[in-house]
Image (cartoon, rainbow, N blue to C red):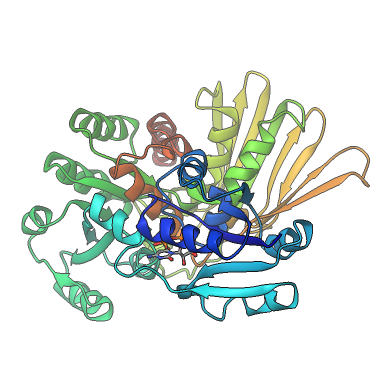
Length: 445
Ligand code: CTP
């Protein structure tokens, strides 16, 4: 008996998939088809799969060619499957020619000619027209956004707006996008905007864009007042628009894996969350000279508040701040202390004090340490009373990590709401409320 194996995502099942499976089956007597899991696809950088694993398996099954369907969930699995199932032939389409030659040590490797003019990518583009996006603001984060956005299919960043024509021109030349000197003209020419302007302008720009029927991805902090954030989410909801606060960590796979484990009960009940993010900044930078909205808390707290809100919720009983200020009155280092009914938390932010960028979640049965920089979660450990009992986890964080939030933004606009839980309106509103309280206290002291 000749056993053949092949693998794929088989998203939006199409004729190319059908013909590949048909020919694979014809090469032997028994065909095994490996279908990739969502997390494996995410790991290898395929972020835009539409169909669920069950749907994709079902579509492969319906062809009648597969004698066995397995799931592919990790790198290196192919070699183990080939050995485990005594596979004689490994088959894949010609788009992969040469890539799997290393398997020749274990079985015959056949590259079948790919069916022309059809792919899941093409179907995704056809089902969901390319989203036209404009950028408002041209600072450092906007420059990091551009290469990341190119990694996400279904979106085209086509124009930029900055009230300062020189900055617009520089950005437009560097990233090959159009310049719009008039905001309303730009808002008329796109379906969505990414707001990367100074903090205090986020609310106004987001409001204008939502009022004109555009989806909005807005840099953190979305708003500096709770009522402003509430207003924006009502505007979005009323019109069925997507409004997302761009806290990249909320969308990154490792962070989400860690949250799942922390909330699963393995460390017992969570009693304390300590999150720290510090970055020594040039004293002449905007962050340390903008007397109204600069300082470490407005700059960094969106990150440190995130695990606290995600793990302990929005309903804290009390919050207080402790701050070290610079000569100009801006906070160089701030600790926010939270009190919850059965837990506490600390968010530490620093632009003039350096510390370990670690996240520690303490529970009644154990604790989790997320290694620095935890906001780009790559690895974490679950530890217990017995120091020998350590569970280590690692996850990929590709590039600058903005691609995860961008990909979820596009999916949500296309009607796939499976990522909406990663950062809910209530959570963004709670964070805006904390910012507001901090700024009020800073003004009063
Ligand atoms: N395949 C094929 N002909 C096509 C498309 C895919 O023979 N027109 C083959 C691939 O080479 C692979 C298998 O079908 O062996 C599963 O491919 P998959 O990556 O799931 O499909 P694509 O349509 O290539 O997906 P995407 O556009 O997301 O890369």
